[in-house]
Image 1 (cartoon, rainbow, N blue to C red):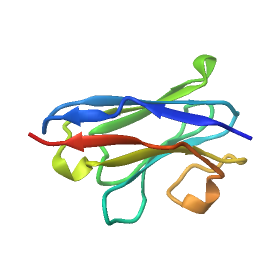
Image 2 (cartoon, rainbow, N blue to C red):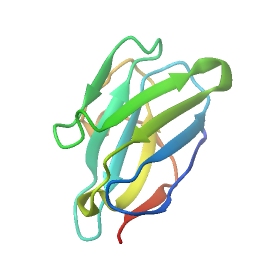
Image 3 (cartoon, one colour):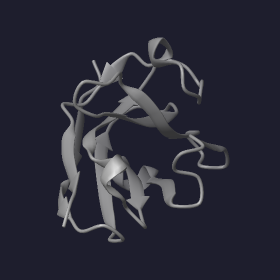
Length: 120
């Protein structure tokens, strides 16, 4: 069983930045997803175990950066230029495979989520 714990969420003004962290064990790819109120959970970004491959949703490309530090068993999501449409609960996920991409059913383990609110 893989246990994931997200942290770093909070309230930020439009144009601001936040960095989310996900503490997790395992030697597989990791992804970030988000779910806004009344909407489906959507893919944000994913990174391979070695960090050499990353994938981003078009909506965050150029603003968000995913990274990981395997020595600390932690993945990060640096979020810049935040806008109110980024408000959501953010989840990290990992799977028993090397897939990186937007398909939710390829991820086997999920964290409990951390709330990000972008508002003035």
